[in-house]
Image 1: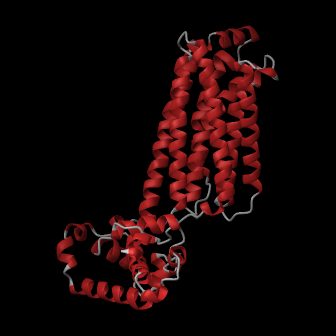
Image 2 (image 1 turned 120 degrees about the vertical axis):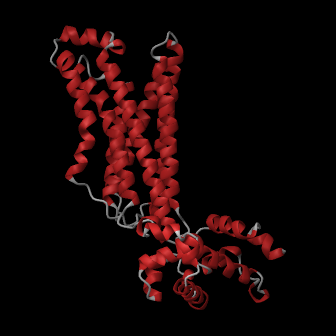
Image 3 (image 1 turned 90 degrees about the vertical axis):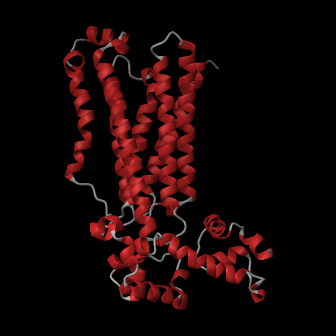
Length: 379
């Protein structure tokens, strides 16, 4: 089997798997249907892009269709960006204003109108022969790269804010949504860098290397798609968003209060609130609920959630996530040292104290004690 046949085989499999994943996302039952549909369309576009490896075998001299297929790559990153928003924020909805994401796609197709879409067949054939040197293609590729950088930075900024909001307002120790999206975005970034390096080979005389680079890109696309399928099948809980109306503590505090941290920490009212909060955490143990949120805790102790957020995240100087986990770890430590509960396994203990993941329990426990749970029990 030669390299072209091998590449075509990989492309066919990658397209099939991408369409299979899109079908799964369209049909799977989930509360976050918008995120699934956006991701499904993203994989349909990926399949269209990957079909370029064998597209010429079925579309003879349909130059307009081929160029239009090229430009569909400008819809991929906007879809991924909107998908991340839909996953992170449970109340996210598509609006008319989101149509501006189509502008690069429309602009590039308009650029191709004068000297390609409206040109005769001879001119189109000539365009394809030297398209790497055509100014329209250089503009197109420049827009693609600029757009990619814009959206990849945008996605990382969304994830950064999501992480802060999550830590300040939620105590679910799984934290799987952030990790999955961060991993996915990082994988996309690495894959795109490889594609850019492959594209640069097009402008050299290394034709053999360029062909092998295409094989590598197709293989990476197939592996990434298969990875997504495994994630989707093994972790259906990943689509758990938070409320986009939540604000960071630094955004809801008066600026003067931020600057007078030491004075405020000594305030009698603040001190009394902290004491009340700590007494409640010790006596009522609300942290045993693995899905405890700052809103639920605020309701339980009858403190406005805004004030509680400032109290914990600013005056106590801990994220709500770490504040709650500290009590969970202390509870776990007492159980591990209790001779009457020595028959309990570490797995049973972590569930009992409010954790729902062994890895997150071990990480948090070692953070507070510098020991693993087993080592602490035996010490």
